[in-house]
Length: 608
Image (tube, rainbow, N blue to C red; front, side, top):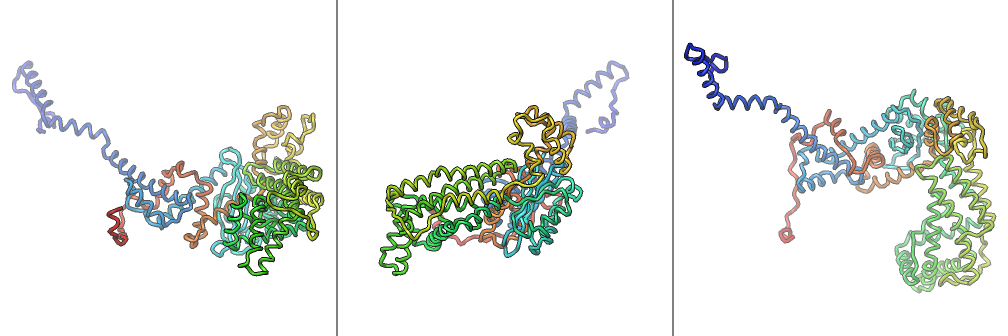
């Protein structure tokens, strides 16, 4: 572009005004159509488009998108319990399918670090949501007997997040230096503090501590619960109701001797098929002969939860004809030793006795109700008030069995009168002492009431929130003293709750908004540590043979994602990628890479 146009020095060639204007108009027209003017105009327009900024944003979006894909892959491994060694293979597969996965963060080490970062960020967000909303907090703990030869403690929470219904959350898997009460307490408090729960916040909002009945946890003098209540005076401590249910059943078995004989016999059957593939195969063949079904037979009335005992009794009842057929076939099998044939002959006689069949029917009916109670106590939504209602209902059902036989006992008595159950002949066996049904049922009822009945002032106070416990015409101040006592104990608004209780009494069909803080607090109390047991089951799935060398911290990270994280389809990695890039490289950052070792080439591949 000429200097005259750049510095505005354009002049006309004539002195007269009209000629000068015509000359200037001609020069402007020629300049407007010139190539120089068009280039200048294009540059001006591009300058207003912020091309550099757009380029930076385009590059940044590429970095984020490719790093997102890598994060989503690592998250998939954690969510689906896949080994970290699958990471580079999945990256390679996605690249073959046309996805852009960057050039970095493809190693097993990177996958481990990404999972750790996501888990830590999740924990921060969970704790921040609980703390900022001042939700009431319950803590559940249980010990793992062994994980990589180390003692560990699983720490779960139950709290309301953003005002929603309280839910269970996994916090951390903590390594224990020892299993003494002092060390467990120290490890728990350190875990809570590290996660972000300050001492002041815990004093105001920690309302409940739940564990199993081990003496180190609930010991009267120096158990973990005792030590915690000394530090947090308003803390409510609770013994898992499912564990107490097991203790009640165990007590009933000890009191009624004939039940123990029944238990020993079923354990013989369990050992017979759990330790021999040959016996299991022969049982399946016998089942096909009689058109029966075979279920897995486990131990009964042991330290396992009562639902497991019921499944074993149900398996024996369902497989009754097949078991008897197998015992008879084995007793006549000349390839077996005489001692072994005699053992099977004795088992067959027991199966063909009227006494054993009636005992099995009785145990089926009783354990069915107890298993139903156990499973309902494990539900996420069950509250202490609901648990008390379920317990009382189960006791009434068991009491009714003393007057009217249950379904399976009725079937057993009918078969006893007919002299056979399907293809199994039945006869009396004077050597067997049958279970006294009424004695056994009464023993169960007594021990359930002894072990599981609700005691204590706080539980009595909570009952005023259950409309089923109200008198037929409650007064306007009904439950006022109990509500005030609960509010003072758990640091809730007393006046607001009292007004809410009065509204509740006038309109029992709807929960007043002003009473919701107290109701939410009541829903925060867990009645069992079933969530911890589910965590241990997950831990066993994570620690497979291929992942037996995982550090305890990595197991904890995997459990955090598996339990608390959303499904892979709902996982949004961008916020985790954003915090990651503050101190780590992206997936597009080039690094020196080792040449992958290719497998030995096979000519057959050309035909495949």
